[in-house]
Amino acid sequence: MMLKSDVKKDIRKLLIDEDMTQAEMAVKAGTSPQYANRLLNSGDIVNGMFVRLVEAMGYDIEIRYVKREAHEK
Image 1 (cartoon, rainbow, N blue to C red):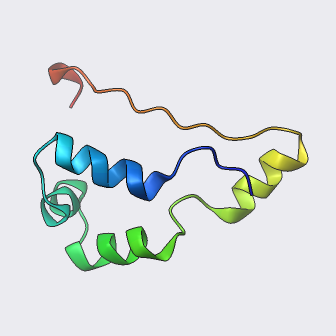
Image 2: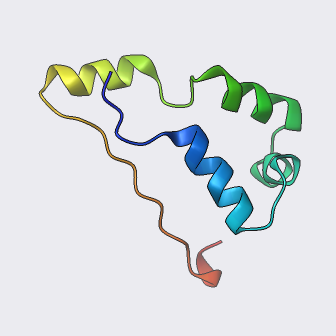
Image 3: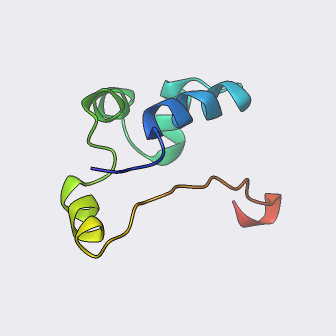
């Protein structure tokens, strides 16, 4: 599987950048801190079948994070 971003590391870095805890992120996202933790530690953040389908067409996946403007939240 070629996912050019390490999503788990990216999220942890974004949490630090935003001075936010994982629990705060989970609550803002409308889920439990336990579920967010399980998701981040499982490695299943990006669906494996999605990655394989994209690879079958000869593509890699790159993820880019762009901060939203205040009115877009």
